[in-house]
Image 1 (cartoon, rainbow, N blue to C red):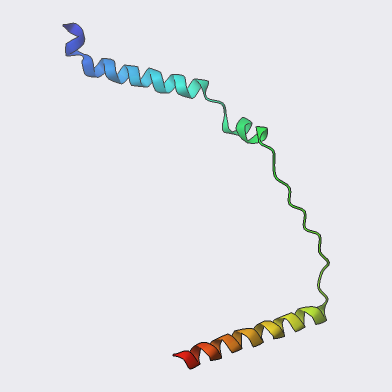
Image 2 (image 1 turned 120 degrees about the vertical axis):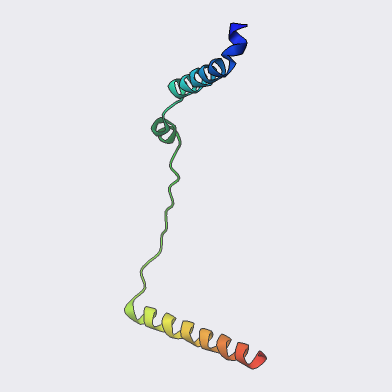
Length: 75
C-alpha cells in the first residue's frame, strides 16, 4: 500500500534514473562528428578576366531586359 500512496514519486524517480543513464551512456556529439568523413569538393576552373566579367554582365542584363519586356507585353 505504501507504493500506491507514493506512486507519483516512484514514477518521477524512475524517469530521473532513466534520463540520467541515457545521458551518462550517450556518446558525445564531438566524437560522432569526428567519426564521419568530411566530403571534399574540388572545383577546377580558371578565373575570368575583367573583360570576360564585363561581357557576362552585359549579356545578363540583356537577357533580363528581354525577359522583362516579354513579360510586360504579355500582361
